[in-house]
Structure formats: C-alpha cells, structure tokens
Image 1: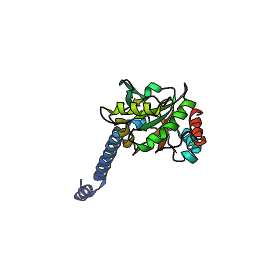
Image 2: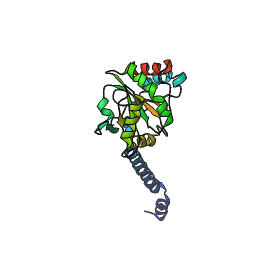
Image 3: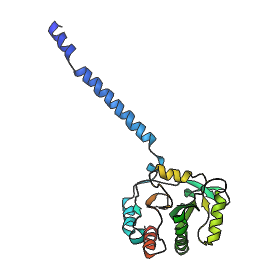
Length: 219
C-alpha cells in the first residue's frame, strides 16, 4: 500500500459514518421498546372504534353536548371495586352488557343532583344488554357506609351500591387523562371498552339523555 493510499484510508469518513448510523439505529430501537413497555395497558386493551364513538358523539346534543365520543382503545375490564357486601368485583363481571358507568361521591354536590336522573334512566333502560353502573368513591373505612346511607335516604330503586373506597379507580382515570373531577361518566361496550366520556353532570332523564343511551344500546 502506498503512503498516499494509507493517508486516504485514514481520512475516509465511511467507517465512522457506518458506526454512527449503527449506534443511532440501536438507540432508536431501545427508545421504541421502552415506550411500548411503559405504555398504559388500558391504552392497548381494546381496538379503536371510531365509527361507534362517532355515533355517540353525533347523538350527544343539548343537555348531553359535553359528552365526547372517544373509542381510542382504552379498556376497563380489569377495573376493580366492591359490591355492597364488601366482596370484590370488576367491570369484567358485567361482560355482555353495554354500560353507563358513573363515578360519584356523597360529598360531591353535582353528583348528588345527578342521581335522580340516573335512577330514572336505569329504571327505564336497564336490561340484559344495558346497565347504569354507579361506582361510589367515598374514601376510607366509612366510605361504604356513607354511600349506603345516601342511597337509602334518596330511596333510589334502580341504583345498586358499588364502591371503591381506595380511590384507585379514579386515579386510573386521571392517569389515562380521562377525568380530573367528579362526577364523570364512561360509556362502555359489552367488552368493557370505552366509547365515550362525559366529564361533569348531565340531565340524563331528558330526551337528549335518552337519545345517547338509545344510541349506545343500538350500536
């Protein structure tokens, strides 16, 4: 090899470029792996359901105008809470039913005001394929008792007591950027997949509210 050729090889940027590209590819691969590993399980639990979410969004007018069709793939089958007797259950126990899941607390004034309308909707539409599912979030050891007393005082005939006094269910909603306050309502399909979200209260026992419920049932 001549001195000239050796000098040319030393100055050639090709080996260094190949090494740099190789390291960049490895770094990108690691970044993608970390992102997918850290992605919230609920974000990958369900298929995207744009059409169904769009139908609910279109039905949400007037008193229900704040409802947002989502259908982005979030699922809640693993969301756990307790029955009135204190035993554990989850959204998966209601498989086969489309659900109007309302998160409420006895200290939440808008929640309390919304309950009569939810009771009326449940009385009219609850069936083998649809259910209004209220989940109370009064915290602490006395949370379940407070919820029982409130429901008894209101003499609600169609709203069973389910509760999560750990507040973990709502923390999950906050983590998924679904809600920041109470009340909040999720509309779920028969597999526990989110189709729409309503932050805040609504006049459910109105033609507008009934139109949304009927749209969910009719999907």
